[in-house]
Amino acid sequence: MSQLEILTEPNPILHEKCKKVKHFDDKLKKLAHDMTEKIFNERGTIGLAAPQVGELIQMIVVEFDPKKYLSEEEQENYHEKAIPLTILVNPKITWRSKEKEFADEGCMSLPDIELSIERHKEIHVIAENLDGQKIKIRAKDYFARVLQHEIDHLNGILITDHSKSKLSRIVFIGTPDFAAASLNRLIRSPFHPYLIITEPDRHQGRGQKIIFSPVKSIAEAHNIDIWQPDKIKNIKSEIEDLKPDLIVVAAYGQIIPKAIIDCAKLGAINVHPSLLPKYRGASPIQSVILSGEKKTGVTIMKMDEKMDHGPLLSQIEFKFDDKISANSLEQNLANIGANLLVRTIALYVSSQIKPFTQNHKKATYTKLIQKSDGKIDWNNAPEKIERKIRAYYPWPGAYTTINGKILKICQAHMNNDKIIIDRVQLEGKKEMSFDEFARGYHKPIDFLTKIK
Image (cartoon, rainbow, N blue to C red):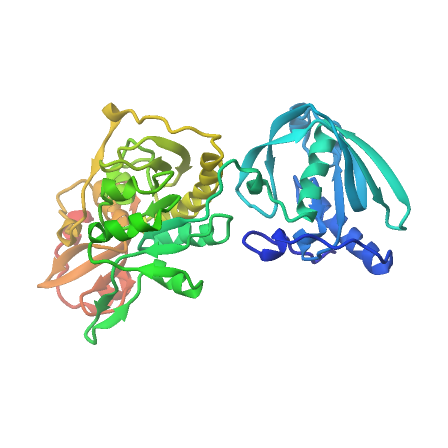
């Protein structure tokens, strides 16, 4: 079985021009065989160019048989002709039709990006086969598009290079883990930030150890410049001097002034973990759990001077079960949002999507969570308490007091309309199962009378 790995952006090999093949030997045939096997094993892949697997030589492999790769239902909706297995060495386009058309294209080297690309409807290609014999191909429509896409790879050209607008100066603004997922994805995309703005380092614990934000840690690992102002409004003129093309914001922790938003050529876009206009504000993830919702999502929006108010660029829905906690939901939405961000930027900078106004009449708002919000009122309905435990895990934590000490309720579940405590953490102690805690705690546990 082939062990080839597909290179993805920002690998520099993908932007290099390939060398002409001079030796038609067993090594070349082995590579062609492995590339063919890779196409067969990667469902939905139609073509592969040698540089995509790390070989800077002029060879492409294309094949697509709907009967082999698609289910019967998918075949009914597929209207292109099958593409026979075609291996081309040193391919060169010798003629292009004047007639062109747009169609969506994806690429294994650019995961999660799909762009509408204009291609010639018909092309003529000369090449060589694996034995070095000359061959000629006349390709039309879909076959022509696939060949043009793969031959582009041999010249270091990706679908994002066809974009009408190039981004070379992206500023990323964010702080926690949610933002770090988007930053990581941007770094692995054509939209690599050249400056990171994150909140100042914090001191933690008795030793006042300096703690970097997750975003700063990633920026340092990739040698990206970092700014950490106490207040971002105080560096407005410095950002203006940079003349950024685009500002990307994800969970920064401060309001971005309109003057900074406006200094970027394409403005500022924000990754927000809710289906706007619902759940605007600081705590959309916790609030959606507290409300008993069964779905949420991620929105990419253009920022304006009001909080989560700007026009929308894209949204994606995410359904979740009634056992998920805030930290798990955040991880899911962070990953979904990171991929959606890259797809959206690709479409936005090539003018393939237009911002559309939110329905402000349907807006709902969330508040900034305080530690005191985690206190449990045992007179509330059990299902409301259980949602609170999930919504506030791990911070600020749903808690109660027991004989003068704080007891965090880390995990619970519902059973026959009653709440069952699973895991707890007593002030100054490690997290443990509730049964273990109860066995070792020799004083009355008052709140049990409220939930049993």
